[in-house]
Structures are given as structure tokens and as C-alpha cells.
Image (cartoon, rainbow, N blue to C red; front, side, top):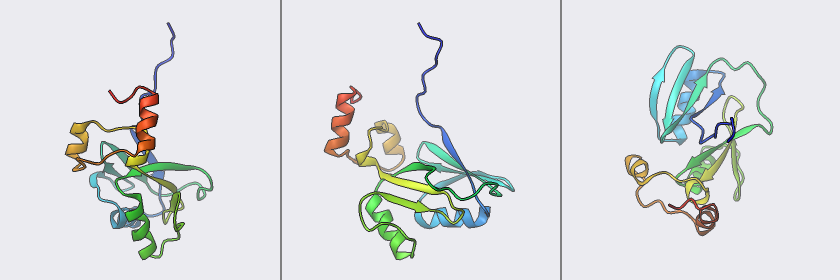
Length: 147
């Protein structure tokens, strides 16, 4: 028996932003989300069954390699929207974007990651039928996580 607890997931990510209104405008330009709540210097945006907390003002320099991974339903559609908006991103392969406050976000497609949402959560998010790629399914199978 061990005294260590088991980490089972991430509840939220907190990002510092220069300007809360500008940050919310940027997020709403590219992502569909519900505003969970807002105060003068904080806002919480629901992204599926987790959330991102935005806090102003930013007190540290822009990120270089430090980043977080954001899962979306269609990475390539987001890449196209970012390119159309003049946001510098790679033409293919991995998708990393820097928000206006300097936060580095690595975007991954839900179909390609090993974690899974329950059918009820997918249905509630309007993502019924969003299937995993063969590589993601193999990764889940190898860890006996397909249920």
C-alpha cells in the first residue's frame, strides 16, 4: 500500500493575459465556448468538461517552450481559421499558436489523443460520432483503456 494519491486528470489551466476583454475576444474568434463566469480581473471559459481560467494582468514574460495542450474537434479547420486571420502558424504537422498575451498553446485533435470522453460527455458537447484515429485506438488498447 502506498500513501501516494493517483492523479486522474486536469481540471483547468490558468493563463495570465494582458487584457481580459481582448483575451476573451481572441478566444471567441477561434473557439466555441461558454463563459463560466467573470470578475474584474478573471474569467473562466468552459471547454467541454474542463475550463480555462484567464487572469489579468500578466505578471511574467511571454512563454517560450512552456505551453499547454488544447484538444479540439478539428485541428485542421482551426489551422485554416488562424491562417485566414493572419495568425502565424505552421502549414502542416503540429499546430502551435501564441495568443495575444504570449501564451503558447499546442493544439491537438481529439481523434489523435489517447484520452477519451464518455459517450454522455461527447453527446452533451454535441460531438457524437467523433471517432478516434487508428493510432489513438491502438494506444488506448495497449493501456487497456477501451473499456
